[in-house]
Length: 231
Image (tube, rainbow, N blue to C red; front, side, top):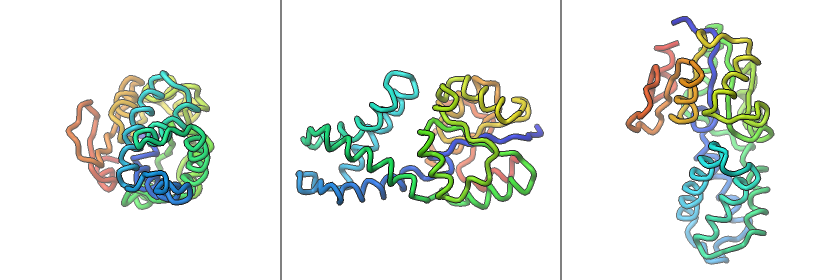
């Protein structure tokens, strides 16, 4: 298959969400003096936060909760697990989190190299992300990867979320791309891979965590450098 357009996911695929969010949450843990409230182990608090964040993002992507609820409740529920039932604190931390997070710039190994390689080969590259629009644009600008992408399609702009096929159709239309010559590249089997399949796209599962695949992607890789053998 000859592809012309490559559609990438951002978080957990190129931009290392876990490392960047951990750095951000460590700053908030210190600034908001959570240790003085009885949350004495940062790693334990962050682990709980990651679990709540993952679960609430899943609910958000399925349309069960709104964006604003996701933003503060993932922190509120984490505080609640440590017997700190403060919505005021959770909302304050949420504002700070979304201010600080996009200033972080850790990417997965070989991100710049593979984007440069693909750009030099003449591919048109785009992003499809469920992340918040203002935050995602700040991320790619701070990480100095914005110039690689022709189109950046967010759930807010498209009024739909991966894995809904509408966000992929919106992205294809904006990029003036044909689905037969396009491929979706991402780490999330539900949002990126099944979503891409539902929209009629070939897919590449970026299996950074080396889990057992459950959705039949066209290709599966465990390191971004492996894209060189496909594209």
